[in-house]
Amino acid sequence: MSTEGYDSAKDSFDSAKEAAKETFNDAANSAQNSANEFKQNFNQTVNNQDNKKVLAGILGIFFGGIGVHKFILGYNTEGFILLGIFLISFPLMCIIIGVFTMYIPILIGLIEGIIYLTKSDEEFYHTYQLNKKAWF
Image 1: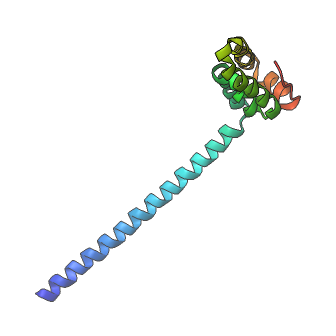
Image 2 (image 1 turned 135 degrees about the vertical axis):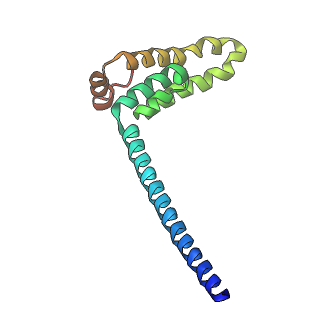
Image 3 (image 1 turned 45 degrees about the horizontal axis):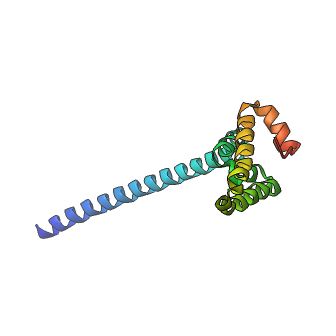
């Protein structure tokens, strides 16, 4: 009787073990498929020109003063110019001059952000991505 119970328990254990392996493999495959799908969608989103337009426009409106929208589009020199004006103006606010110069990069970013968002996708791509028009 004990051998029969032992064999029955061993068979139950083996079948449970196989079921657990199968479930684990299914979960691993599902996780791998989800990760691959996420990676593919992420790459499409990052490399898509439409999203650069929207991203650059929104960043221009909210963070244009520090030139983030210029860096997104690959205009590093112009981005550093805006960032430099902002960083120089910030300490100059103590002597009032910085209050006026601080608005220059902020207004440029706001205007460019609005321009980016109002252009058609094709016009934005040709103007700012292919022809590399740096300002406005």
